[in-house]
Image (cartoon, rainbow, N blue to C red; front, side, top):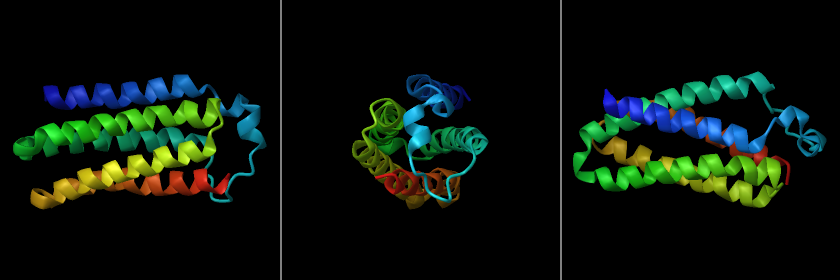
Length: 149
């Protein structure tokens, strides 16, 4: 239970930090001027999606580390890097307007998540399902970021 609380704190803390670093996209003239993809969801979807994704990701990580103790160091590194790339994307894209670097960060984050997914499939395929919303959301995010290039 302590480990789950820790992952919840890290994940939701990362979301809060990323949100703080990017500011309010609805007030960002640069973001508003972008020609966005037709499939760009309304703003409220992002909050709901990220809440669900981080909840599932926290449970996924807690369950994965419970079953994969022999591989815990690499799992923790993958997790830490995923949080880093997720948090850093916000200011890279929204503040500095580095669209290409932002896209690279999203692709790296997706690869890190695929690695965690692959590790989870080796022994506990059921917990891998918890990561699917994040993976699907990352594909959407990559497509949205790529569209504005």
